[in-house]
Length: 277
Length: 261
Image (cartoon, rainbow over all chains, first blue to last red; front, side, top):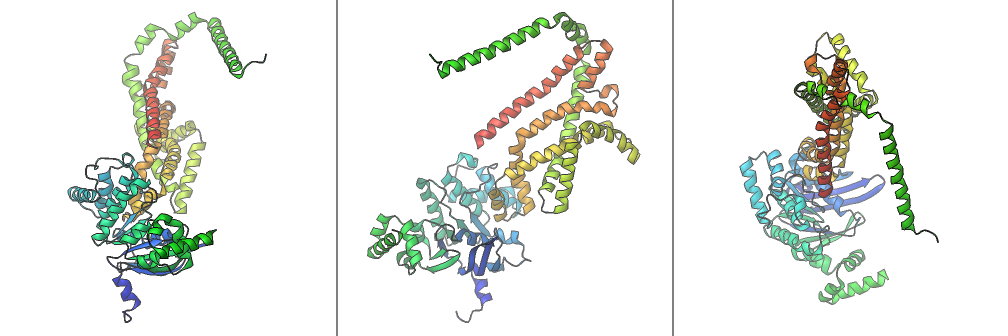
C-alpha cells in the first residue's frame, strides 16, 4: 500500500481528489479536499448546508470548474484541459436534488435520448435498455408518462434510471431525497440501496442518516469547505471524534432515534443541546 | 346617512354605463347610415370581388406571410443563439442586427430591398423571394428577441442534466433547450405571425402584378375600380378570417402553458 505512487492510486480508484479548491469570487467553498472512492464503494458525504459537499460532487464531473487541484475519475484526469469531458461524463451517472428530467419528453424518451445521441445506440436497443432500467426502479408501465404526470418520488426514480441507461461506472447523487415529500423518500432510497447491493460505485451527498448508516461503506463529514472526519458509519455517525460532527449529528438526528442508539449518542445529544443552548 | 361602499360602487358603475350608452346612441344618430350603407355594403360590388379575393388575394396573403415567417423564424433562431453566444463578435453582430431592423420602419426596408438589391447585385429576384427576404428580415429581429427570452427561461438544470449525460453543449442546446424554449415562446411567436399577416400588406411597395395582389392591395385596387368602399370591408373581413383563429390559438396555447407550470 505504501509503495503505491499517487498516480497508481488515482488510476485504481473510481474517484480520486487531490488538493481540490473551489472559489466563487471571494468566497472559498472548498479549501483543499483530499479523498478517494474505491471501485464498488458507497461513500456518503454529510455536513451542514453550505459546507461545500454539493460543490465537491459537482467538481467530480466538472459541472463546476475546480479553482485548483486534481480530480481523477476511473483513471482519467478530468481536470486535464486536454481531456474530452463529454467522454468522461457519459461514464458518470448524476442524480440531482430536483430531478431535472426533460419535461418535453416521456419517461421512456428521457431514458433513450442520451443513449441515442451520445452512445449512438439504435432505437430498439436503447428502448430495450430503457425498459429494463424503468423496471429496475419499479416504474414499468410509466414509459409513456410525462414528468409532470409523475410524483416527485417517481420522477427521481426515472432520473436514476436515466443515468443507469448510460451504463455508468459510478453514480453521483446530489441530495436525491431532499426535494421529496417524506412519504416518497423510501421508494428512492430503496432503489439506491438495491444499486449499492449490486456493487455500483456511489458518491452520495445526503441528509438521510439512516441510509448512510445502513448502506455506506464510508461516511465523510464536511464542514466549512474541508473534510472534518471520515470513516465507517459506525465511527463517524455512531462515535464521532470531532465536536463539529457531534453538533451536526445532534441537529439532524431525530432525538428519539438517538436515544435508541444507546448511551453514547444520548450523551452526544445532551452535549450538543448544552452547546446549542 | 353616508352611502355604503357597495352602494357607491354600484352608482359609479351605473353612471359609467349610462355615459357609454349615450355616446353610442349619439354616434349612431349623427352618422349618415344611408351613405355608409351605399359605400360599404354594396352587394353588387361585393359579388364582383369573388372569387378572386379568395383565390388570389387571400391565398397570396397567406403565402407571403408563411414565406416571411418561415425565413424570419430560421434567421431569428440563429440570431438568438448568436445573441447568447460566448463569442463576443457573434453577440455584437446579433445585437446590431436586432436593434437596426427593430428600429427602422418595415416600409423603408421593403423599398430598400425591392429596389436596392437588384441595383447592387444586378439580379432580378423572384417576387416570392423578395417578399420572403423583406418580411423575414424584419420579422427575424423581433423573433430573435422572443426566442432569446424563451431560451433563457429554460432552467439551467436542464443543460446540466444533459451535459452530465455526456451531451456536448451544442447537442444539449438542440435536443433539450431549444424544444423547451419553443414551447415557452409559442404564444408570443403566434402573435408575431398575426403581426406579419398584416405587415404582408406592405409588399405593394415592391410593385406587384395583378395576380400577385394580396388582400390589402386587392381591396385598394377594387376600391378605385368600383368607386365603392365595399372591397375595403370585405378585405378587412378576410384578414379576420386568418387572424381570429390565430388569436384563438394563442389563447389556447397560453392556457396550456399556464396549466403546465
